[in-house]
Image (tube, rainbow, N blue to C red; front, side, top):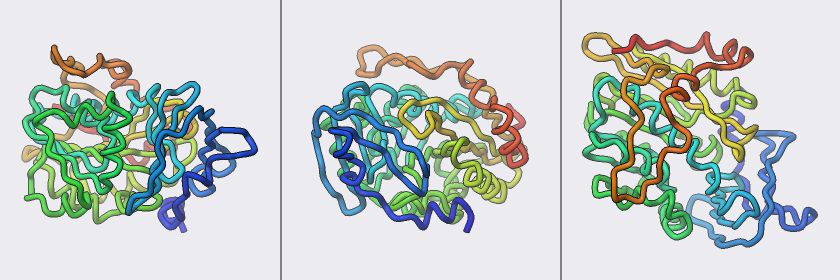
Length: 325
């Protein structure tokens, strides 16, 4: 099987399996499928929440150095110290690249609310749907991570606790300007979010000129998976653009996470060049809970597509660059 197929077939990991008693209160992110032979460890000072939803193990703990930490099935999803880098980039890379200012946006996954927080910075957005399969993640985030979950308070946000794939499939053709897939790794309930039928549904739901951005794994660990996803997208977004970018984030595997970015061609055949922002970074409206941007700016937007040589050599044959406005 390919790297992608092996990951999809892997079993979920329990949170308890990653709490190593021999290290006296450390959480170790262990996965023989996703990052064999290595583990990110954080010192735990207090377990704040442990629960099991219909889909996954959910845990929150207070760490010594990274604030509160959200864990799903043994995998670090977010920490208070560094979550902003991923949330800002997965939202603003597409929304600052799309030719027309976005009005209607869909988030699939993203139950912690961080991506919503970033999207609502864009004043042109009129309607923002979120389709999150696990309501427990939403409730836990609201209780323990108010800095992320504040996005749920915006009146433009419409929350749907449901199967994201079905939600996308049920959307009328040409509904959204942008779809952002904030998924976990392709193990357990998130595995279907890396498969072709889901991407085909997204393509149908996008307007001409619309954009997709999805979590794109780590080029240090998952080059074969990334190449497979890019090739799959090239076969779906025919005539469009398919590109790859990344950001740094200390508590994700190998300190890096990538993004697969695709655009549907306009009627005139124009496509989005995700390496060139066409609008400035959004400014947090006055009298809101939104903090200033802490990672994203126009320079880092352009730099996100500048890959080290080993990564460029792996990725470049599988991308289709956009034409720009």
